[in-house]
Image (tube, rainbow, N blue to C red; front, side, top):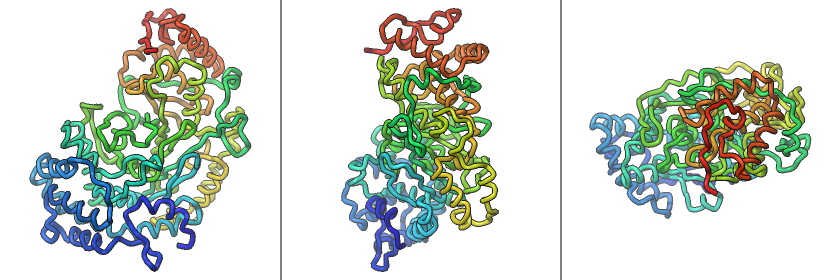
Length: 542
């Protein structure tokens, strides 16, 4: 491993060491513990949650991890595996899941060695993707499984994570919360995670997942090689047509029937409260597709001009409910096809919204800030910002097809011409999964729940940003929100009158100006179309 820059950046946050021969390895006592567990509970005596928590503490001691685990985490492991699981399921877990997980952890050093050998030439190796550092990490699902096994066993060092603004990564808080303040939603979050491990120990998936930190230049106008967010005058003069707008009063973003870019209503820390007590849109998405959690290892918090795009995460669990009513309902077989890199054609973009914006959300400064976040969401190129419809920054579909070689092995997927296509596309600022930006947006009430945003305002902002990005459609899931009952009627009226981006923007600015001055208490929809029922908007606190 001649060039260790990528490894050196992540090594302080991994539980493994570099030996005298420059090879990655576990400490000998950890190897002994894992080898014992790999032989089954009769050999290791790890046959209950209580004993598992003791084994975890012993391995942490062998790794010299001095930061204490969350209070009550041992009790949480014991509660789940010894009481909440049936005796049969618990026995099966310790006999059929813990041994292969131990074997997977034993292979982590060799999986990482293989990963860096294949990624080194392209710059997509595992590393800290720090603030204002655009880049991508491409991981095999097997490597992700090993990393998440480290999370389950709480083996990641955490002492320096706060300094780097990195989110939680070990699962101790998840289990501690289960015991400290039991709730059915927390139990069912853990059931999703446990089901994921059961699945990969039964049959290891062979695909890949990419994690990309995306950056929007703070300068305007942008340089030829970077994207930037435009000013208010740009929006006022935009003549691009509004894209089709589809409204779904029921259903879920992740169940959208056709390919679309799924919006993750994110916290600035990727995953939000997924490994704590959180259980709303972002956290649920991370529970049913736990491979998303891997990004929390190496992606620090997002700045205002950043977004995180994750491509290829497989869904493993089905569920019902939301927040306190969330329930794991069983296995989910993800049938989405894969792209030429072996990633499932699932694209998720994490963007955080204004938190408790109140009346500020109607001010021009904050409207532009929200458009900036959504521009990053939609993956705009500098050419699109200048209304150049030629997509010169994108890699052509023919180039992808010409460079794509058939593969029947994992090794081919991670090397050769395919990676070269990705590298070329990345240098050009292109969208290497969907070269012509041809997929739409599946979204919903972004920043409207705990963050307190105006749902009518947020809806229009997302529509404008997607249209300017030349997306072919928006599929908007209202989740039955009363404030958006007239959304379909309003969007159809706007499209019928053939408004463009500038037209709608100017109306939104006029409304926001009146709202800021206290001249109207109406919501935007009733203000725009007086024939609608005159519902006063919920007044944000000053």
